[in-house]
Length: 619
Picture 1 (cartoon, rainbow, N blue to C red):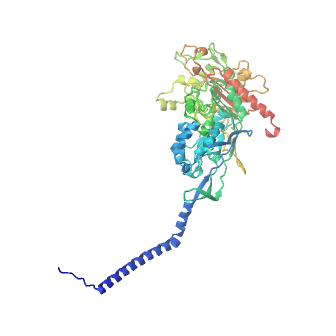
Picture 2 (picture 1 turned 90 degrees about the vertical axis):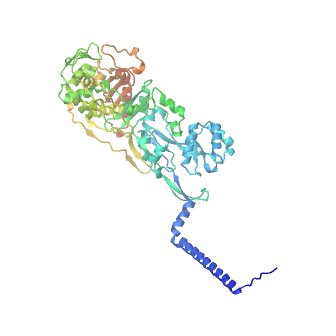
Picture 3 (picture 1 turned 135 degrees about the vertical axis):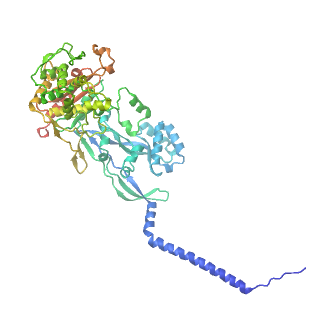
């Protein structure tokens, strides 16, 4: 057996060892140099940038939500306020099992499924350490139920918040509107910085139109937090600016009188201060309670409102469209005088019907036997249809449209509310564009008595009445009289004024006829002239809901209530020094003189009595 022997070469091994040490030293030196360079960059070159990032990781900007401004009526009565309310709130990061927690809370407090879904959407928009409301406006029973089991719900607690409240409920729902939780569509449109932390926004009425003023300016607080983003300390704070308070021209006492006077009927009442355009009454009946919308109305309750035949969610004063009926007759009469189509003294014979030349069709008067020979004053006083058929035929639709448009018919009034309808003032151009048909002479006749295609809103009717009372001076209706903060007060939006050039004697002739409507024994609204020491100028109107055949007779008792005629009335007073103009529409009320006129009479009487009771320096 042979053996193998290895001979060590010490020189080679030493050299190899030294080479490895040198390589390791060079590698360590390079790494150390890189580390030193990086430290220099972090401490000197990138200090400002990384210090800023470190601060962002430890300091959070928390929005401070402003207190919403209040809304008052003209006498300082609160129409919209903020009241303390208990809310059930959850901090998600402190809840071990959110689904289980929500399920148990739902059973405990009988929470509707839609509120659970709404909370899930709300919390996804917030940080996990943010307290987010699940229920707002807890009652005593709900508070007591939760207090007993509170230890079993980590991350869930009761908080006190300011919640919007409307003390006059359905009385002001259509004019004040309401606030509700911000939805997805609104979230995209609202300015992010101003609404960070806000959960509610104005949805309708004044609350919506003046959202910017009422909301205020959001503040912020710099909060020091730990690595779990939990607050430790407040470093800096900029207080929010509360929303401004709004003082309206609305008189809540007059509003209640109008709303109550409508009684069993649906309808609307609008009253305007003639010299300024300030809206005194803006009533739409039926109304609805806006308070449930603030905290989140139950789905079944909302469906009940939506499906109601009476349409309580519909703002009749702003959006209701009605044939004006005979309330247009003073304006048609004034057009006839201004265009010299007729004189005030000229008499026309009324046999109870009118026929166009060569036509067998009879356009009937409301009085079967006719009014006999009547002049302009008598035609307005007795509301003679045949007189206005003939006058409309003489004027023609082009001049009627031109003149009526000057009084604001067929266009929005410019009131400081969102959603106003413009109505419809028909013309031959409109009919051809919409229906691809020519205009017929018979359509001119019925336009002359406020029937056919012509549609108005109660607000339009009130504004036109105010313009007539103002002898052609046009005022823009408005609701917000003053916007006030703790330090300053300023008027509401500018009211554009204009005027219609009218002959004074023509206005006098028309107004005298309107005075006789109320104060003459032959007037159609003579019942409201009792026990007053001033004169009211007015005009009744009846608008057909159901068409009546040529030889058929209208019998109210044989017709379903919902198909009965609408009752209308316009008025201003005192006739010699007008202060207030009123328009009343009573759906299916039948007769303007017996149903609508007394409502206007009550409002005028109350307003003028209040005005006379004021100290001399306030008038």
